[in-house]
Image (cartoon, rainbow, N blue to C red; front, top):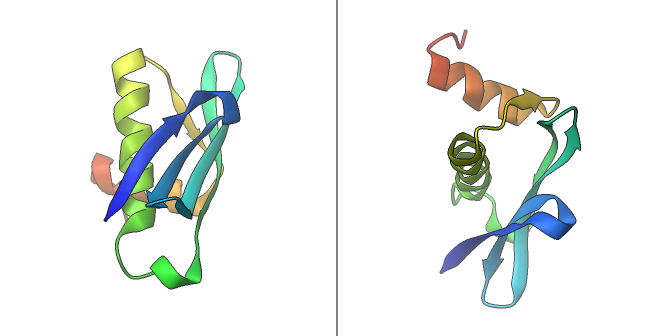
Length: 88
């Protein structure tokens, strides 16, 4: 079972299957915002919505903390557009 963790010190959200790192969504802080710069899932865990769960965790935490997300990662940008109803 995949568990998502917020790892503030590493500036990332990480997905784990037990002790195995399944994927990450990383960001960097810039002018009070989070620049979401990379989302990656290990090949063994692709097709299980791990990336989507990571990005949704990023969105939820940022919303909870009142932090703006600046999407540099194309997958984050895609999910932001989908949430806003502006996806092409």
